[in-house]
Amino acid sequence: MKQICKNIYYVGVNDRNKTLFEGLWPLPAGVSYNAYLINDSKTCLIDTVEVDFFMPFIENIREVLGDRPLDYIVVNHMEPDHSGSLALLRKYYPEVQIIGNKKTFDMMQGFYHLTEGLTEVKNGDSIDLGDTRLDFVLTPMVHWPETMMTIAGGLLFSGDAFGCFGALNGAVVDSQMSCDAFWPEMERYYSNIVGKYGTPVQMALKKLSGVSVDYICSTHGPVWHEHVQRVIGIYDRLSRYEAVPGLVICYGTMYGNTERAAEVIATAAAEAGVKNIVMHNVSKSHHSYIIRDVFRYRGLIVGAPTYNTGLYHEMNVLLDELAQRDIKGRLLGWFGSYTWASKAVTEIARWNDEKLHFEQVGQPVEIKQSLNAETTEQCRALGRAMAERLK
Ligand code: FEO
Image (cartoon, rainbow, N blue to C red; front, side, top):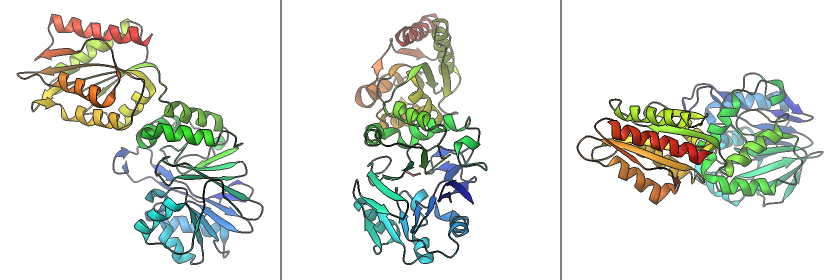
C-alpha cells in the first residue's frame, strides 16, 4: 500500500515490457501508468491504467478499499493508457459514478460504450468527498481535447502534464528516490508526446498559477513533491520552445561521405566556441532522442544524401516529425549530397520554407559524390556561421 499523504494512495502500475509507447517511442526503462485513490467519506479513483494491467490494478484498489464501494472515478484523460480499465471497473463497481467533461463522454461512448452513471463537470466545478474537495480545471489539448486536471487541496492530479517515461522502481514520491534518470526522460516525453501543444500548455500553466501545489500527481513517472518548482519550470521552458545554446547536427549517410561533411561542420563549430554539440545519425538514433535534443538546443544543422531523386527517407521522416511539433525560434543550416542528380539540398530548403520556418544560418553546402577542397571549406564556413549566430 503506497500512501502519498493522509487519505490519498498510489494505486498505479509499472509496464516494464512494452518496447514502444504509442507504438512509436522507445521505453528503455519502461513506463508507469499512475492512478490514485482517495479514501474519504466517499471513495474516489483518479484515472485508471492500461487494461492489460487490470489485475494488479484492482488488487491495489482492493488493498486500500477492502469491501468499501468505489463511489467515483475521475477521468482526467481518455487516452487508453489511462482510461483502459474503465469498462472492467464498472463490472466490479456497478454503482460507480464516472466524472468527466462533455468531450470525455463523447470519447468514452466510442471507446467503451459507457453511457450511464456519468457525472459531467465544467471548468471550476467541484465535488465534496467528505474532508476532501475536488476542483476541476479543464485544460484542453494537454494532451487531447478532453484533458482536465483535478485539484484536491495541495495535490494536483495533472494527467499527462509533468509526466515522464520510466517505470517506478519501488518508491513513488520524488523525495524517496534518485530522480537523475527521469530528467532527460521528462524532456523526451514532453517533446515527443506533448510537444506540439506548447500554447495549450502555457494556457494551462496560467490557469494553475494561483494554485498552491504541494504534490503533482501526474499519470506517468514520479509523484513530484520535493521538485515541484523544477518540474513546472521544465514544462514552462519547453512549452515556450525556449532553448539553451548548443547545436544538434543530424545527418543521413549511405557510404560515409555525408557523415564526413557532418564531422567537418562539427569540428568547425567546436573550434569557433560551441561547447554543446550533439550528433545523430538519423538512421541510427531513434528520432525521439533527436526531437528531444532539438527542443533542448537552439541550433540545428541537417544533411542527407539524395535518394530516388528525392531526400533520403529517414531525413524526410525526421523533418516531418519536427514540423508537426510547431517548434519555434530555432536556427537551421543544411547540407546535402548526390551522385548524378542533385535533390537533397533543395528538398531540405523546401521543408524549411513550407513547414519548419526556422531562421536560415549560413550557406547550404552541396556535395557531389565526396568532399573536395572547395566543399570542405564550405562545410567549415557553415559550422563557423552557426557558431557565430549561437553566441
Ligand atoms: Fe499518457 Fe496522453 O496519455
